[in-house]
Image 1 (cartoon, rainbow, N blue to C red):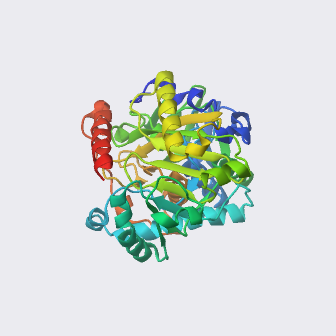
Image 2 (image 1 turned 45 degrees about the vertical axis):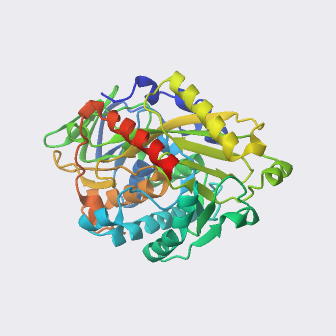
Length: 442
């Protein structure tokens, strides 16, 4: 099993102080390892939001399904993200998407992905600390603020919604006091507790009949008359395979995946619960999700109990030292963004991977080298909604049945491999360097 980052990234160390584990600890998500010879209709590798959604919908359709994870369900990005169920999944421009089948259907799928998670939470009665306040794109520069009206018009057209432009002088009145120069408030999406969502999915999948195993990494995938997935203590034989490992995908399992994903690090901190007086002093009281529209962005929101969750992109090395440096940078940026909270403790901090593709769009479709195998990956930091949605569609694709929701043509196209192979993190280094220059100039 090969990865392009150091082994540290795939251990539990980066999530030892994860805020979300306070309510849903690792132990609550752990499942017994797979043992012996297991025969099943469909085997799923990866038990994050994609794999759990696929398992749930397959089991509800009466399919015998076995779900494997190298650690435990939601170990990867699904259990450690910022808690944004929002628009997104692609970084491609509308012009690029039009060349690949159509931007409009991609935008419809983004909105449908939010609706899918919303409906699941309601249908399964999952209490995931949902806050239906939409999200704001905050302007980190005056140049960015000048683009907000055009962005509002474009988003209104693309998503059939009515965004609101907030001028810099009015930010405080909307509970968004800070150094930003304006915002675009979009009434779509909601924040949630990702581990509460994940454990709700896990329980529903198991209740529907799915068999779930932790500590069962896929060491090899073979195929002849049937697909065979080998783990340390088991061989799982299946007619169909779903690969749902996203940013935690091994380079060589299966060989087709090599170079088609690029994990990118994201780091997050969380404060202790803020008091009403502290909220008033800073003037940031909204419970909307918020993010900056730039490459090296910050993203943040208040939880229902007024913990501020604050994350950022960046980092090319997976190690204890890099996590320490990232935390130092985050604390500096957090204090700059919210100076009245600079004294507030940040007892929780963690890191993990989002997943990029060279096409800048997700992929959802067959693995062409393995008959009966399918995959979805590449959510570009927006996997709560899009990963869940494509997991549901994988359940349909793997059964050969009509899709219950739209799958954009752009997502059906096999993503090319990144240049530079195992050295492709250099692509990120170049992008980060360019982003720092252009962000300062904006």
